[in-house]
Length: 192
Image (cartoon, rainbow, N blue to C red; front, side, top):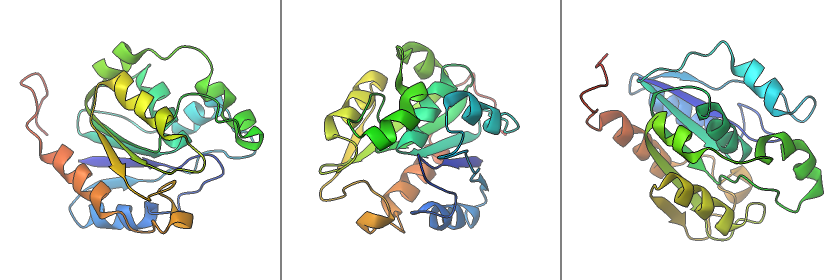
């Protein structure tokens, strides 16, 4: 199995729970990639798609995104797949009312979201959100879960589920990834 962890706006592969999760999954035999996405300089959807272009997705891939990294995964799945699954942490697909971030996120969140196309390109989805996120309103993450028709795991007091909120380790997320990897695949999915 392959896991790809995507950071958000002003993030990096070394931030939050990303190194911890990568290590946890590697001990389980996953091929893990945590690409560095262009941010804040050069941040727009086209540049992120270009930065991701060399990464190949297949039916043994699980994508994990935090904040705008989750929104990027949705845009990515409008154009490619199928993958095994995606886990979206504190996702949103609308302006946040935070000018410093909204200008960087604009190209990701503007325009309609093709939920049907996205759903057709991933076997499963999971959404995780803090009930008191100071950056991403809870309803913004709920709208993503509703659009995908998938479970929403609410973390009481989780805030933005980042290092600032105490999330340098994230066992619930690790367990979700492992559950997705073990889930029975439909007959049309070739086993690796």
